[in-house]
Image 1 (cartoon, one colour):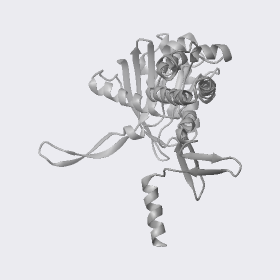
Image 2 (tube, rainbow, N blue to C red):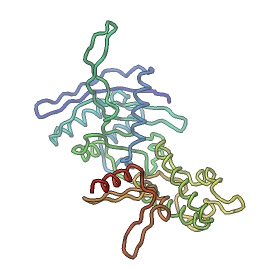
Image 3 (cartoon, rainbow, N blue to C red):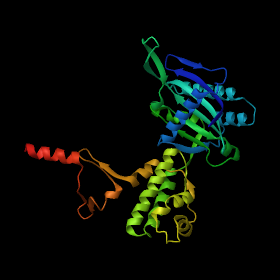
Length: 333
């Protein structure tokens, strides 16, 4: 990771105050800054609520600022200052409150530059001095990062269909519509549709394998997609096929990719996995006011059997903790 530009500003707004504190110069690129951006990125990639899209086709302030900056018309500091002033204006117009700091950072990667923007706050803490005296302190609360996102600058320059990814954090619900409007965001990608379609293809392909190997193939495909989601990476179907070679019969000439090309040639060969969609392939869950049930998909037809005629479940090999509770209860009767 190489950081070429970075700056932080502070914004505090309530019904009684509206204070925007702008830093005049960029941050030094040092170990602390790399640590800050690294932790922000990790938190971002671990979120399940990411939205993928682009700038609105209509004229927008941040859209215009990004265009001017990429063309060299304004500097990085001016880009961030004008972005913050626009945020201040929009929140004031809608009488919304906010507090904290905003990080802007340009990261240079092999595949192209990225512009990160993120909202975060401090949390109170304690420290011990060299004299072993207790003191109060404040530190960045990485566990409750707010709204943030990243612009793929190379994709933006190419005018790709998707180059802007955003996500919301703790306490952002009341601000969501406004923050999306501020960055001129429009959603252009439904990751759940792509994930569902791929998993349907995997299921169909696995059914051409022997029963035991088919179930194993499906499980490994789900695990692979889940791991890619955790890493913030896309799922490339050809790479899935190569990674799961051991899960299929080596005597078979047909791979997952070949199967896709023959049955659904229009399906995406690369997609962004949707965490919520993947979860239902890992576990069956359901609850009411009286009952809560959750179990691994692998158990269906084994330790858990479903009878569609009377819509009932038969569960064997119960968890030890549940068995103990039941035995204790029966012993009390």
